[in-house]
Length: 417
Image 1 (spheres, one colour):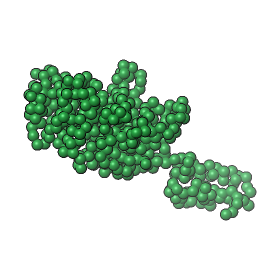
Image 2: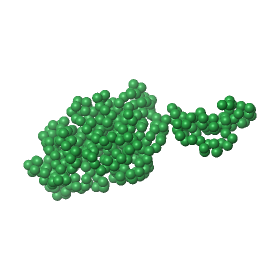
Image 3: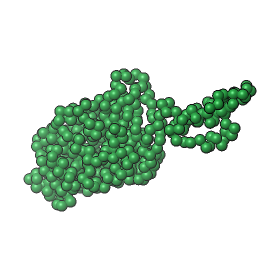
Image 4: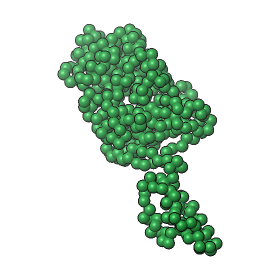
């Protein structure tokens, strides 16, 4: 190879013909752009060559040539209804107070399915390509300013909500209903169906070594179940009905079992889910597809009805049935997200029984408690992760969750080993 300064005799054509493969050599790209033979000893030409070198480096950076300087990751974005696309994007860098996380496992939640299928949840509408996924585990690989380097290498659960800590609700401890709360995978905040994320260090919760990354990811729905039992003010003497035995319903069942609830009834049409619910703590199971679920629950409670019904499906009929299944002065806890932006109740039953209806918004300070329950072997969340897919097959995982086929509870995206 000739020595000297580098240039190209036709900069435009050479630039357009450069390969865009990120594995190409930055050195060869710069040489192609800027070769000037050493015998050309004209100051202004040398200045032009230097300028071209700078431009070449910028070009290489923007096209992924400089590995180790500009790191590229895979990210899956939702562009429209059932329109997922894999992108090469820059790895985000931690800001002060943040950690950089290599994502390991991410559960596909029913809310992800709403975004994927409908492009909206209620009044919140997808308006720009979005990375979904909020039930995530990972490893801290770098830290920003004001974060101890000792945290590098920690296996962590990611708390997906970032409350503002300033509004009246945050100041009162109701962080989950903060009006200004960014939440992974909810517009405009990108989620975790990507290889790396950055997030505040205090929301990256160290997990025990006894938990697998799939289990750590399942802490998010478990935290919702624990919070729902807390919010219901449930007592050991209560008879509890759980409608739906997906990951949220199973989490409510297990939290009720830990509480010591006297009777836990599950209503679930899918055989594999009913069987798992009974294994994890339900005392009775009803198949609403084969029988009158309201009559079956009344029979199981000697026509008294249940003290608390937890609606975990979002199905239109489910809240109507719940209002008929609870006792006089009973309580309905609504967790499921409906397809349409409405909930339906039996007005007569609800009014005559003077029912209390409480809507459950995600979770609030219950992830670490859920982690302790797993470590103490009081609950089993490993069984939620029934199906696994690589990052490139997020679409297939979404379709699996929407169809609920093959006894799926949670499809988990294995982002990295």
